Image 1 (cartoon, helix red, strand yellow):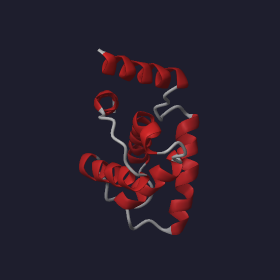
Image 2: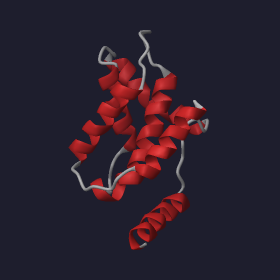
Image 3: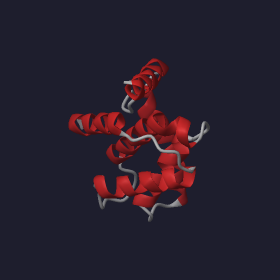
Length: 131
């Protein structure tokens, strides 16, 4: 898990800034999740996978938010990615994913990027362009 978060942080720093539509951004995240995350065959909700997806969404939304859309709904995006990885979920399970994301967030199991880190990241990119 620690290695995974280190890989996500590395991806965050190396992300190339390009303007794109929200649909293209979502498709890119789904493709990344399908190729890099392993899904289990067990029925029900896999909390480890859900946590990894939420981390991915948090990092990617911070790194591309101002070039894609100011109003990306991260929770809905995570649910959409999870449902594309596990298409056999019932409607009841899809509705409970929202509660599971809240629980993961409350327990601190999802990466949280503060507004200070976001501002520092933007300043870093600005200075990088100037040099």
